[in-house]
Image (cartoon, protein in one colour):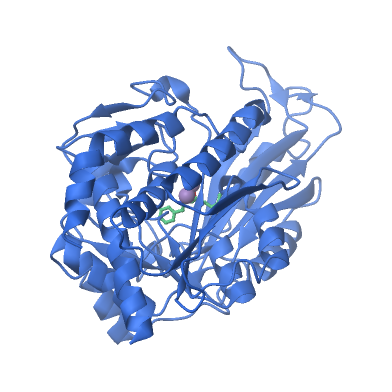
Length: 463
Ligand code: BES
Ligand code: MN
Ligand code: MN
């Protein structure tokens, strides 16, 4: 594998330019105004799979956005790696907070990325990380070192819940058969502290609507005598946490797995600077559930957060009004063993129960998914660990993440294989936020590390 570094050095500019072209396509899955762009994104992915050396790449239409399947089967008796990624991106809003336009990628140096980072929506989540796999395939094919079979499944609806991918997976089990699933859609601790993501949280996402009077009322004529839906909604939301920041929904914690002291001690060994964490997001102090550290709060503990809240008059000036309705979007991050549908029901029952007389409550579930934990005593994890050790010169730390990729647990259920989460992003890369970026170094390091995973995974499996 001596020519890996050489090949990357020789093709670096092209690797960057190809990614930049892909990032120019505003493939926002949430907003129908971008539907043609999402479709254009799927076609660009298909062409790049073929260009990289897939023998086959096809676009599978769904009720939503297309899924691209690609493969290069060199010998059916060898192991097969299934790569998953997504070409859809989050909306760029609030667009005015971007220093450069979200779909006109630019490379700029930052304190954390002295070699430059590509600023564009989707650069890290997930086009940049997904494209590393396509370039890694090209590299392995061109340098004659592809050691096993590879399949790609790249979707365009990850950011909106992957509903159509779930159907596709259930209907295409034989086609998708594999020995391991490989995903780069998470992060690592720092460029000099490699880590492998071993857990993802589950998710239950709901919208609530509180209705009071049948129309907006004069807040003088009626104020004090009827329930104000916004007052009520905020009170109900406030009651969902107690003074220790525990969630108050009955039975919410019933299935939460408590880690042993030994496991918690192991987790606490991961390097972490509270000051750097706070400084990076300009807060004076962290906040959260009593009895748990920051890393625990955001990896092994479930949460409930309001993502948006609205209602009443929010235009210029003042309007004296008691609104008829108030709304909120609420997400609950879950840990393994908590079932997202059960949690959605517990939430719905509780939220309806705590509504006082004078208002009615409607809860609409949006989407969700189960959490995931990947064991570290598998051949796949060992192969990934050895790959990082080779290219970073350091053994990676296993670490659970607070984010969610709901489809991962379904992959295991339907296809029976484990997932390895080789993420190369950093928390500071601002995914889902204005000025999202992805380090040039990280992008190239990913392309360099992935082929070693293939190599070690194949060697360990065929020994
Ligand atoms: N790639 C992220 C998830 C992620 C990022 C996991 C960093 C771990 C570390 C993914 O695209 C995402 O944004 N997932 C959503 C859930 C989805 C159903 C919209 C999330 O976590 O909010
Ligand atoms: Mn993602
Ligand atoms: Mn995302």
